[in-house]
Image 1: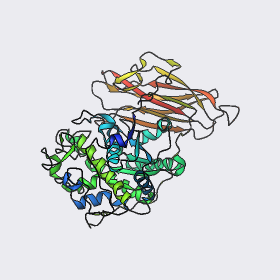
Image 2: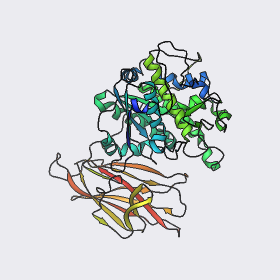
Image 3: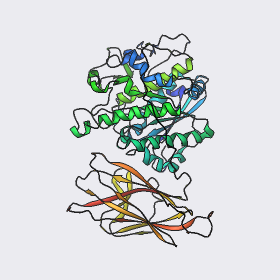
Image 4: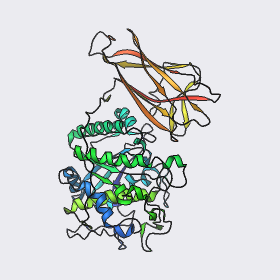
Length: 488
């Protein structure tokens, strides 16, 4: 099911879906740490080329903390007692499943780890029901997700029992901003569902192999460091997490395990899905997006956690010491987010994203399939949108930042025009040197109240102008792309 262009929502009826992966699970209280499928191959044997008991315990150790995982135990109890559990997943293109396709021709969410997690939990808890709500937005980082959160959370038709967050790869650029963004997201999630939802962070790490430019591989230390930052933040916030990094690639200086690039079947007997051998590449495959095998490992790590919690035992297969969590100093306060906007204009809802005036060269269309927006390509021209603002105006905008290829990414100046006065909001730069294209966010709040209306309790009508600026020293075609605009 699709709604207003957002990713799909899946409900797994476990009595029907539980055998899709061909697995049955032993929920007996005796625990030897060997999670067997019906062919007798335990979890560790499934990944015997790249993971051992020490790695598995390091991956799960942060969620073994009794204080942090109390709400996760409630979710596991609901699964075991046959109830419906709603899991909302938050992330970017990896969570959405870009680039994922398996031997059964599954794509997008059914191929990515959220869909695999739904099927795995059904295999473990066949009497239960699992609903996966995909709140991911491809080509975003956490900051831009927060900016668009009011429209994204509208996809929830019922309160979530569990939120799983998977943001890392796109957040490596400005660590200090990520710190504030993580604190803000956790604050928002803790206030949703009456504060009763569990929260789990899935720490991932892409390694970029030989098939990408060398400049991309230089970014690995940044993503590695960000994993340590996340660990420190979540330990301080009391949020549980599991670490794909510590399961597969626990030592930076050694790089990924050599077996990550093993291209044969891992074990002669191992089959993850009917007629599909589980080959190599259970680490990132040297591309921007991981293979379905990586997604399967992510789902297996998370589902193993819930199997352990449902059993009520740790089920440890190794007595190795857990990883050392870096100390985190003073956490910042959550930043203000436009949670209840007066105006929401979004590229995911074309009917709402209407301009009051569009100059020459401005139009709403898809320059990339599935990714529409307002695009301007003539210097000095303006597109305008009618918005409502409070006496203390606040604007949140998302726009595309990309590298210059056949088109030069331009900048644009944003102005808020009200009856009393006009304010220059920002100059948004659409270009950078990073070889990726992402939606990024900019938020602005007037430093002092504006006399925009007769009453502080009544929003006033204003206008937002976005004007393309002429780049210097270029003969290339130009463009600037706006993807959302919210006002408070």
